[in-house]
Structures are given as C-alpha cells and as structure tokens.
Image (cartoon, rainbow, N blue to C red; front, top):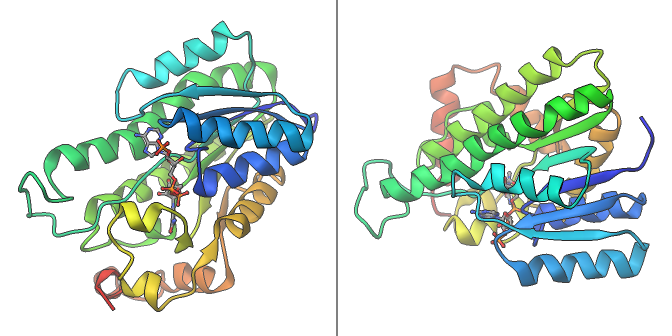
Amino acid sequence: MADKGTALVTGASGGIGAELAERFARDGWDVILVARSREGLQRVGEALSAKYGVRHHVIPADLTDPAAPQTLFDSVAGLGLTVDALVNNAGFGLAGTFVDVGEGEPTALARELEMLQVNVVALTHLSKLFLPGMVERKRGFVMNVASTAAFQPGPLMAVYYASKAYVLSFSEALSVELDGTGVTVTALCPGATRTEFQVAAGMENSRLFRGGQVMTAGEVADAGYAAMRAGKPVVITGAANRVMAFSTRLIPRRMAARVAKMAQQNA
Ligand SMILES: NC(=O)c1ccc[n+]([C@@H]2O[C@H](COP(=O)([O-])OP(=O)(O)OC[C@H]3O[C@@H](n4cnc5c(N)ncnc54)[C@H](OP(=O)(O)O)[C@@H]3O)[C@@H](O)[C@H]2O)c1
C-alpha cells in the first residue's frame, strides 16, 4: 500500500500510544488522536504537526462507554476522513485478588467491567467498524496492543491477563482471515514498559517492574511500528520478553501461572 495515509490511534495522550502516533507522523501520516484527555491529545497533536507538518485531529472519547466506538466512527466520517491504520492501543490494568469485591478495591466488579469494555469490547467494536472499509479499499493496517500477559494466565491480575489473551487470539484469527486482502493485523505484545500504566494499575512495586527488564515506550513503539509496516501478525518486544513468552510453551500452564503470580507480587 502507499506509505502514507491517516492513522487513528486510541490512547494517544501518553505512553505507548503517543509514541506510536509519533512514528506515523514521522513517516508523513496524518493522525487522529483519541483518549479521554483533550488537553493531553492536543499537546501530542500540536507537537507532531509542528515537528512533521502533518495534520492532526483530536477526538476525545471515553472508551468505557459502550456507545463510544460508534460515536468515534461517526465523528471520523463527519470530518470526511478515511482511516488507513487503526491502532487499538488504549487499555489499562488492575492488580489485586479477584475475590476482593469491595467498592474501593481495584478489582471491584464495576472497574473490571470497565477494563473489559476498553481492552476487549471497544477494540473489537472499532475493528468491526473500520475493517470493512479497509478491505473494500484493499489497503489498511490494524494494530492491536496486547501484552506478554497474553501468553499465560496471570493470578493477581486475572482479568487483565485474560483480556490480553483475547486481544492476541482475536488479532491472530483476523490476520489469517484477511490474508490476501491488502489489510494486515498486528498484535503488539510489550512486556513491562515505563509509562503511566503501572501507576494506574497499582503495580509499581511488583517484581515485574522492580526486578525485571523495563523497556521505554519509544522502544516498544519502534518495534510495533516496524512489525506493522512489515505486516507481521505478532511482535513481542525485547529479547528477554520473547524468551519468556516462548518458555511458557515448554512448561505446564499451571506452572506458568505460578511464575506469573510471583512476578505480580511486590518485590
Ligand atoms: N506499560 C506496560 O507495562 C504495558 C505492558 C504491556 C501492554 N501494555 C498495554 O499498552 C497499552 C498502552 O498502555 P501504556 O503503557 O501506554 O499506558 P498509559 O501510559 O497509562 O496510557 C494509556 C492510554 O490509554 C488512554 N485511556 C485509558 N483509559 C481510557 C479510556 N477509558 N478511554 C479512552 N482512552 C483511555 C489514556 O489516556 P486518557 O487517560 O487521557 O484517557 C492513555 O492515552 C495498553 O493497552 C496496555 O495494556 C502496557
């Protein structure tokens, strides 16, 4: 496909999403930036337009709202824009014991359902809305941000790990379905990455972030963007994370879950 177009990036106000938006803009793509914080999006968008001369559009949306994907799709159409790359990056994690259901707990039902709405349902809904047009035009990229959490069950973050297993499975299935259409789907699987994620998820003191190798959002975006451009179905960022993801295939799944539990515990 032509090497420029318009990319819609969710979760573009910071972290991995802002870095991914930068990679598109650097290559001359216009960007549609989506997240809750209008100011955060404007800051990112203005910097990209100033530096690379591309057009940016800011569409604030709260993806915990089940109506948000359709509203977003309609806003994009209303602006007369065509999306050539859809990056489903917005997402968050919640750490805690699943049975702690008290209202203030991170694992309270309402919070976990919101997480599933953003990580799983909105990602699926946006893919459903934007993919048919891409297939019709015989060109397009979809990048879904999964995680190394997708490769094994994750006690103490059970719902988050399961949500990312969905993202990986869904993306790999679509990638095969779309073979030969001119549209590719890439699942980006970062390991621990220094962003606001670990603060929001309450896991700054976990062994994963304290003891393990932590990448920068820029390194993750470089790997993800290159894999997407190459049409690769899956990319795991960082050599240590690739070894870890592969090793989960060699040990019993229950043992992999126990190892993940240790990584989730405080250092
Ligand atoms: N950091 C890691 O260690 C790590 C590892 C593996 C995978 N990931 C995945 O990478 C993706 C990006 O995370 P990150 O590390 O860059 O985290 P981050 O710095 O917290 O950024 C998350 C982005 O998502 C947006 N967002 C959050 N809730 C939203 C909502 N309800 N509606 C719309 N946008 C929302 C945030 O913007 P607003 O607050 O302005 O809405 C922000 O732009 C996520 O899918 C995450 O699961 C992260």
